[in-house]
Length: 321
Image (tube, rainbow, N blue to C red):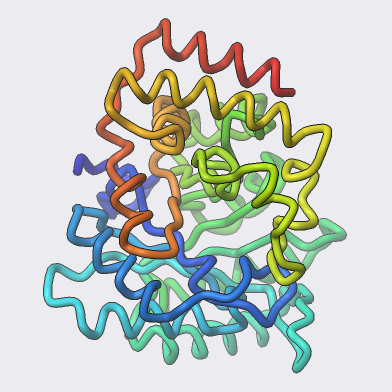
């Protein structure tokens, strides 16, 4: 797979990275439902076999479990070790209830916990998962702490996630921002207005999450499956998986299937390729729950969409909105 330089770092990352959100399993409020660890490890191994060179996880995914699964997968992986990216500032209680904590003490404690669970000495990219809800001064406290962790050798690089332009400017006033991790897909394009142009201009890498809209654009999400999503799957509460939006999104998938057929690829791969054609995007985070799913999406970066196909896809996406 081709690689791209991530922001101001020396990290050369593949255009697609493995997303380990679902690997956390159930038991917390933003879970994807039950997940078999053996399947998760097989999925990670298959992604690495295909050339993916980075894994994105977070402390909060499965309230620590995703990081542990990633560590187990890497322990038995005999090839080149991938970069491991994780995140902080979301803490949880004994009931799996998640609350943000941007204090310096909390971030330092989280960093130590993540290093232990991942069984590494340094985190390749440590990211602030969300800015403070009140947009208050704890943003500066948190970012200064992360910059200090980088200076201390606990993090190779530091980045942010879900930040807007003003928040990135505040962070940059303290220390360079290597990357931002926002959501981006053909049905979720808000970052095109300000965030992507700013990151491109400032040399901040962008690793986008949910390029297939949390599985909605894979071709495997039917009305019946959407209606049967278990309550411990956060997508059961997502308006995109309910009417009236669901029918429009399914129509979009049918258009993606037609475009994909010309390349011998599936609709999910076309959705990912569409995200990656934006020059401000460094890489896309793509999740998979088993090795078979990996084979169906992790080589989407090879697809070269024509201008006509892009116009067709964007027209369908506009209709879905």
